[in-house]
Image (tube, rainbow, N blue to C red; front, side):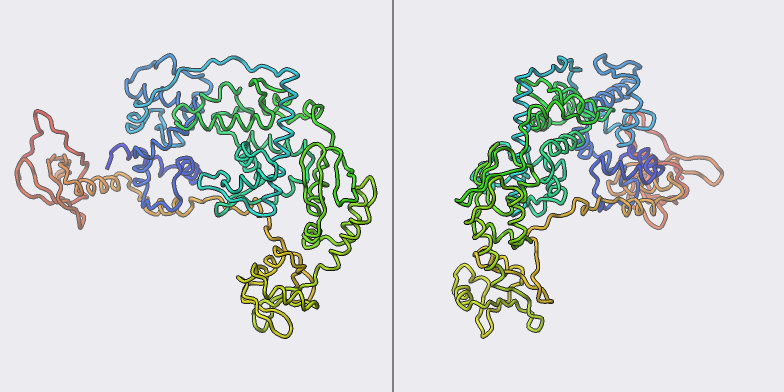
Length: 593
């Protein structure tokens, strides 16, 4: 066992539960770790592999402070390299942060394993980039257009995830099949993965079982005005930035400084490029890396101001033209809340500042299955239309509503099977022989069809096959169910280290020195190490023995006395100290019994 771990084990034992939880989370410790005491914890935290996982997470300021502490520890010099000096006002806070994650001792010196790991790494010189420049009118116009396009594309992405979860690869990016689906819908596939990251920052989506699903927060975001959508994304982007890019005021460092902020992270160059790409999609960075007016308060940590951006965005409209060919045209960007509801009734055919929509029997049926009625649809379209409701569209809505519910799906409480009934026997016959429904195992009887498959599964299979099905509850009334209910963003439970900390404290004895001695002796026996043991004699004197440890048990240490060449058994309670023997030209002498 490394003797370097003992001071850290003592510090860990004296730390509060909240300090330990913060430390374990920062170091990526698993809550189910098998540590039995604080000595195990200290050994793990000073293990080279654990240190190598932690160093890439350090910011430039933390890495600089740690390198300075390491240099001073290694050389015992008062001054470090000039390039490594950081502001005195920040040094104390940074040192405290490094102590809190067990990279420095409380006195500001480095643990020997940390020294070895840090000395093997180079630290680049302090960067001095050019100051951030303000964007020109043309650059701002392009940045505003990109922000508007990105927000609209993300809304389209969320609408698709609302219909059905999007498949992800193990890397977290969208699967190729999903990207083809997005491309077919007219979305810019090349920025979809970046938009997904922005959505995750704002908790608009969540990932479960390698599927991207819309959350309740995302459902609400879809109904916000375009500027409010952009504001939520920009604020979430700022909050989600890595610590190395954040300022004490709550903003971020000038963008030219970003690439220097995690000097020991080999993946930082790629991560930084991805962050800059997301900032550019939001219009927070212009094409020439200049800064638009609306990005300044966000970077400075102040409240978002949208007036400058609003002047460059097209005005939203709240009216559409309904046409006899069952299509609708919006003469500008339709207000998001209206667009979301309209797209629940009609399918959108083109997306631009003037979007077009088309009504079909399937789209109307889908709306009714989601809770709309013929009356609610016609009332909504009547309020929205500048041209009234064409007769073909009114006829389509009424006819589809009449057909809806012609097929009833419910669970039989007696047989626990799913039943499908209808007044139209032709429909029942068609469903019974429909090859697309074979997996349901539908069997015909006098009153309809039965299946061993669950009720909801049967219902959605019939709906997908374009049968006018509805679910009926136990009370005989139609029910509205959501095929892909949005999970709540508050469902995730943060990991807790309470059980681990309780186990460590349960093995925390009142005598840390005795506990440490036991650990040293156990480690020496395992490795058959040679120990220089100081033994307290009955007369109060101290005697040193050079023992090759061979066994430990019953409160006694067994070993071969190297000087006397005899086997000895020593009571552990009489051992004052023990350390691994470091051979020297003149070995220590021991007296024989």
